[in-house]
Structure formats: C-alpha cells, structure tokens
Image (cartoon, rainbow, N blue to C red; front, side, top):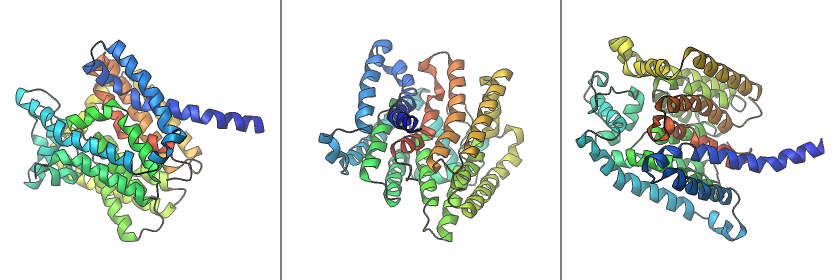
Length: 380
C-alpha cells in the first residue's frame, strides 16, 4: 500500500503537466495551422518550446521563486492581455467592413444594444447574415460595454475581476501567477482576445461567481446577488441552462442548503430571461435553433449515443466523487468533457485545424482546469 501511494504521488506531477499541456496547446493548433508559415515545422517548434515553459511555470526553479511569489507576473500578463484587447481587437473588428472576420462579437454587442432599446434582438442578423445566439441575460451583462462603445475593455474588466476575486479567496500570488501564465501560454486565448470572443470573459465571470459562492462568510444578500449573476450567465448559450445545477452540485459537499438554493433560483432566473423571446420566436429562437443545428450537423446517430454515454459516465463519476473532488474539479470536468466532445466533432466536420471553429470552446473551461491542477486540494 505504501509503494502504491508513493507511485501515485510521483505520477501526479507528470499527470498535471500532461493535463495542462493538452488543455492549453490542443486548441492552439487552430492558430498554428491558420497563421504560422510551414505550420508542421513552426508549430512543432512552438509546442517544443511551450512544453518546458509549462514545466517551469508549474515547478519554478529556486532562482525564479521570488519573482513568482511577487505580483509582477500577474501584472505583466494582465497588462499584455489588456493591451491586446484594447489595441488589436479594433483592427480585427474592422474586417467586418470587408465582410470578413468573426461576427460573434457583433452579435453580442448588437443584442445588448437592441435590448436597451426594448427591441427583440433575435429577429435581427449580423453583417454575415447570422442570427444572434448569445442569450438575453448574457447580452444584458455585457451591455454596459456594448452601448458605450467600450467593448474592447470587456475582457480586461473581467480579467481584473477574476484577479480580485482570487485574492479575496486568499489565493497566493504564486498561484495567481501560475494561473495567468498558463492561461497566456495558449495561442487560442490570444486569438480570442484579438477577435473579441466572449468565451474567456464568460469563463472568468463564472469563476468569480463560483469563488464567491464558495466563501463561507458571505451573507444572504451576497448569495442572492451571485445567484442572479449565475442565472444571467446561464443564458450564455442555451446548453448552459445546466450551469446552475453544475455549480450547485460543486457546492453540495460544503454548503448543501446554498447549493440547492443556487441551483433552483439561478435556473429559474435563466428560464425567466429566455421565456419571452422563446415564446415570441418558438423553434426559430436562434439560441435553440443553433443547438439543434449543431447537434444534427456535428453528430451522427451513433456518435450522439456515444457522446451521451460518455457524459453519463462522467456524471456518475462526479456523483461517486461528490465529496472527494474540489469544486473546481467538478466544474472543470462538467464543462470540459462535454465541450471537448463537441469541439472534437466540429474538428471532424471542419476537416482541418485551420477551419476548426470549436477550438475556442476550450476557453470556457480552461481557467477551471488550470486552477484545479495548480492549486492544492485545500483550495476552492
């Protein structure tokens, strides 16, 4: 038994390295094959450099430990992401005048603007002719940046909130530095920042909600506010209707009453926000239509059954380990496994890494995986 325990202990650091490398670098393959010259060669070199970099961040040598325990790594990474969002995003956004680029940011911005004008955003389309798929609660959360023309500052604001929330949850600067450096190691993250994608801000705000709800000392008004936030976040895309249940389940072992309250009330808020638009548009409701179209276009009947079976096995595993796993692990698995399956299906449909639209899905669960791996089990 002692030998087995030692073997498991020795294998854990290697498993952590492999997990972080796959989570950060697999989605980076899209950017490598899309933008790199001779991607097989240059991409291989990039990955060979990324691997020892990840090892150094996870296990910093003595000479770097003082620096890693300071605020400087977090400040530098956050500043670099903010500069990229504020300066690079406008150039990528300007491609819309040529009928190019991603219209996901435009859908989110225009949806928020329409809601403030008391209009139904789900009868409009983007400049590429696509329907608006972000849910109403999510569009309202982003609307302070949408209606003021300051969308480029949305990612920096959510990143600052995440850092503040981590510090409030008593995370050491060394843990926060590891989190941000590993997050920044993925080209997928930088591509989303340049395009104004909303996957990473969504993940950061969900992380803030989880860490807040994990705080034992918060009062009922604070719990109610975070529950309302979670309900709005759950409208992000229609499948995230299950997000409150996942967050509630992750809280169950520590705060059973709070877990039930959060799950039920946040789900009710999510449904309440969707209901009027679903009633008006019916099956043509774009968030619902997108879900049905993706399911039909990405999976055959056999593949769909296999995907559902994997998710059922995951759910049973989470139930078995409901006390043993930390909340971050539950959320990382609950988001990561299903969206990895969807992402893999989209890669198979696309046929090439350069056209792999599902690579960005990794950003929705990447923060949780990184923290679950890098922070000791005594963390959130």
